[in-house]
Image (cartoon, rainbow, N blue to C red; front, side, top):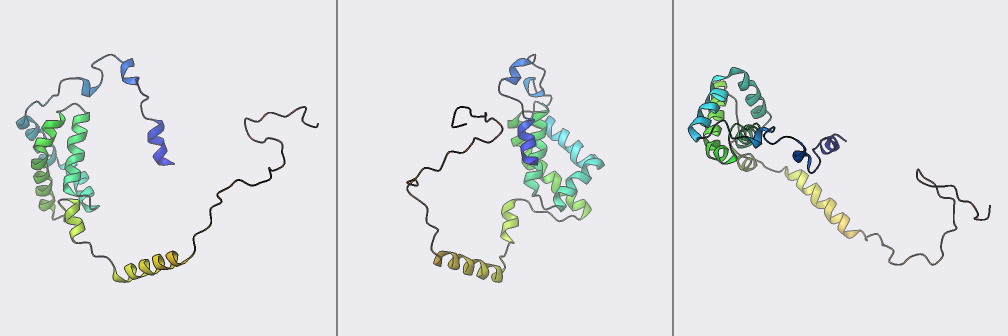
Length: 173
């Protein structure tokens, strides 16, 4: 149900055309135009700001890869109108290095990417055997038959039920 809440609260198509142009952050020129400006911004936000350390370290402790944390930071900055997406892509490797430096300062273990997480993943042999047995057992069982034709007799008419139904008059009443 929680996944549906985001869909309900999403803007409707054409809604952006009902506001004055320039009211949205992404409709204005970016505040940080060059890669150097963006790097200074991220250095101040990631390295110098102790409050952001807690949020970054918490994500890393939850095993969110460094490249995903950097992507979240740069995409949210694009949404806020701080810089363009191309500047964000160009600074992403440096942002990742800054995040890793903060993690190293606090001694927090991290994975650089999802590939690095999956390299260390080893499946439990017992769980694999159990899954294979279940798969073989389900393949040996006959599949349930799916009816291909409609029933020959029509079911007797019943009174319509439901929210939008109307009472029927003149049908044998």
